[in-house]
Amino acid sequence: MEQEFKDNFIGNKKIQGKFILIGGVKGSGKSYAMTQYIKLSMAHKVYDLYILILPAYNIEASNTYKFLNIKDKHVFIGTDYHEGVTQLLMKKVTGAPKNKKPRILFCIDDSSAEQLDHHKMDHSMKKFITSIRHYNTDLIVVAHATNSIISPFLRGQIDILILYKMTNYKLLKTIYEEFLSLSFDKLKEFIEEYKNNMKEEYNCVYINLRNQKIFLDFKKLVGRFNV
Image 1: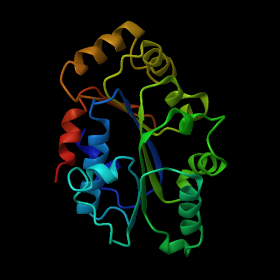
Image 2: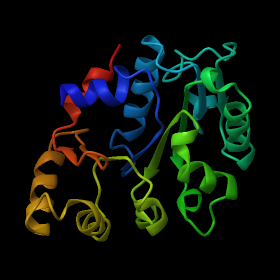
Image 3: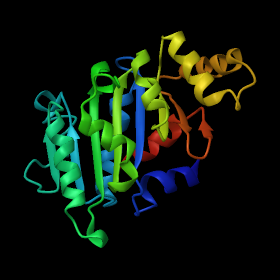
Image 4: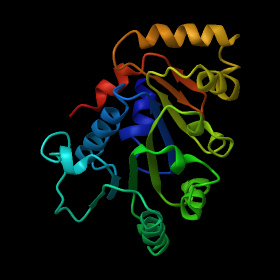
């Protein structure tokens, strides 16, 4: 777990581009994990630019998000996602010299099912996700646990999947069949392991789809995000 933390969160300053999807029910801790990672990456200067879509920012600016400086030219904060945000990011990267492309963290909190639906997703986001490795960007999307978060389109694009508490059995079954059938002999075995870990409040399961590493007690790693 320690090496995974270094390779994917603070140790590797060369951003190759990855898509991290965090899913779970309301109040499970998924947005907290994203917020803590933003803090950590800022403290370690992992990225040059932060593009943050935070729907609750105006409500939580003096509390949860008080560490963010709206006057910082390296931080862009929006409360609603729209296609222009992705277009701006892509333009900023493609317009920079090859050896000076900015390292970017692009976060979308509380993403709607529509934003993750392949048929409704805007063209710029589709293009960005399918070619994320060319944009020197790490994308973190936090979404409510619905079937659309593992749509056929997204299944082939996700690099890291972090699962908080879910009550959607069909969704867990899809995740098992798509990603975990080689790691667990039976669906029942995965469900039992998952349920046991979810007994601890704010725990989560971490699945790196690039290297097939799975951590069932990922709360310990999220704890390392504290600064």
